[in-house]
Amino acid sequence: MDYLRIQGPTKLSGTVTISGAKNAALPLITLTLLAHNKVTLTNTPEVADIKTLLKLLENLGATSTLKNHVLELDTSTVNHTMANYDIVKTMRASILVLGPLLARFGHCEVSLPGGCAIGQRPIDLHLKALEQMGAEITIHAGYVNAVAPKGLQGAHIIFDKITVTGTANIVMAAALAHGKTILVNCAKEPEVVQLCEILRDSGIDITGIGTSELTIIGTGGKTIDMVDFEIIPDRIEAGTYLCAGAITNSTITLAKVRPDHLDAVTAKLEQMGCTIEIDGSNMTIHPAAELKHVELITQEYPAFPTDMQAQFLALATLAKGTSIIEERLFENRFMHVSELQRLGADIRLNGHTATVIGESPLFGADVMATDLRASSALVLAAMAAEGTTNVHRIYHLDRGYENLEQKLLALGAKIERLKE
Ligand code: EPZ
Image (cartoon, rainbow, N blue to C red):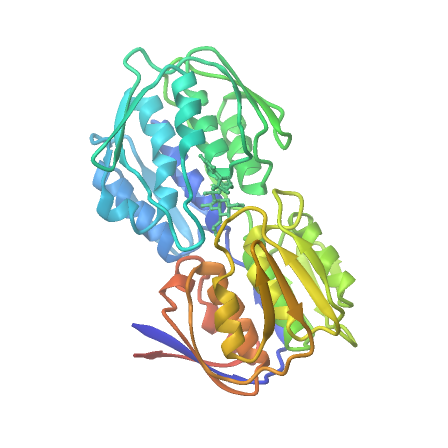
């Protein structure tokens, strides 16, 4: 297995180009299951999760080529509807094939994704919504078996909780359903907005885009003529690099960003004393003269994103004063805490709240990545720590950060990828 060796403390400088958003690309790739034409997706991030999903689609009979961030996908040859365990277990977002496969073929068998490090990650809301649309769903031997022999019917669905991939799955199912679907309490993440925009541009009557209520008039089972498009920039990758500037006390510029997708993150960095300059699709961070403590509560978009919680927790270890970070979305998203403590951080955990005593000097050590965003937090802390840090199990990082060490090396970090 690979690990990253990082020397700290290090200063950064220069410009980093942000890649396309993994969490936008995943549902957009499964959306092509609703199309009868070949589709080209540009600005596609070449990360492990994308390659895993493309492998799943190829197992179903689709063909794809991904080169220089250009993905060409043709699902017209799909002739299987079983998403099997050996792929789904490696990436739970594979559940995003459920809605499109059921809508297009009237039946599918998708392995239950199972939990992951940060939580149990149920899909009950996805299944309940599909049942309301007329699907018959049974769970047997670890698989979701879904059938809708007469096709899916439009319904009035109120999500008990806001779910990002749940909203995406049901929006895609509703696009091919018979009649009107009204979805209430939808996720408003930019990744969901782009999915809805592309459906609209592909001829689907969808209103309420960007709000928590969506109305979709389905095609009654007819596949769509899907438009080509460019995937939006990754707001979480961008937020991570902003934190890299803040934690190393460096001025760096991010290129190809959507600053409007980062308002909650920018606001918190400014509260901590940083200055953020926005110039079109560029963002420049100037570090704080004295980093101030922060209070964070993770919530759905547009509030502060849970996917940035670990990175800010790392940053808070250096701030002046005590920071309070509350994780409201996932039940186990503090695994980075014990690893940060190995670097010298002074953090107290009490249920869903972490209290971070600031101005704790960090010293290099061996640490272990536990999930995607936790691993990026360890890399950030390692660049601020005195000495050498080895971050192990970085296959977690490779799932969602494209060329992380190359991008950090170009900014001046002392980082190299080695084999265990
Ligand atoms: C998406 O996961 C993202 N993944 C996650 O990013 C992100 O952390 C999460 O949204 C929250 O923003 C992708 O987009 C591929 P949810 P998702 O359904 O859709 C509960 C990363 O680091 N829930 O919005 O799986 C659930 O347990 C990843 O890139 C149910 O109870 O998250 C959680 O508490 C990590 N029943 C809350 O809702 C359901 O049927 C939000 O989950 C579905 C969800």
